[in-house]
Length: 217
Image: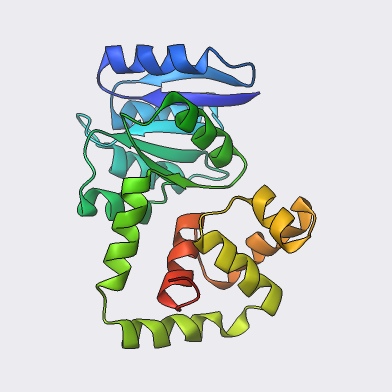
């Protein structure tokens, strides 16, 4: 059973999300919070596997709360939920350690899939957000950025590079295992090594490393 904390300042939104999650057999809502400070306190109290975090909340916003939560020992995965999809919001959220960024009009099936992926150590972005990430990367000074990115990949093995490409394409561990004819446990092990070697905190940062190095176009 995957335990979920819902953090949103609107009671109706929290109720709607709870209703969606309660239609499943493998997800359970263990707590709710109406602001960022309460969310961080609820994480300490209830130890959820995944937090659904609104960005704009009183007292402490979702991004500040996410950064605080991700600094805790064995932190939960955090999925940001918002009605906005500005570049600044996306990159602040990912920089704070969010495992995913979804718009509030995301279909329920995609929301449930994102929670399951986050609990398994994967990440999911709305298609609109994915396009923003790619666009931001391509607008950089590619020559300097690519040289720096390739230098970071010096310690990465050939197999790890293959897996990094698959992550850059947005594939989850199970799909990577099928594509590369590996066990899912082996893929997870390689992903762990990539986190360590590239000092990444989530799969989105690994995907960015692949884009910046030119491994994925």
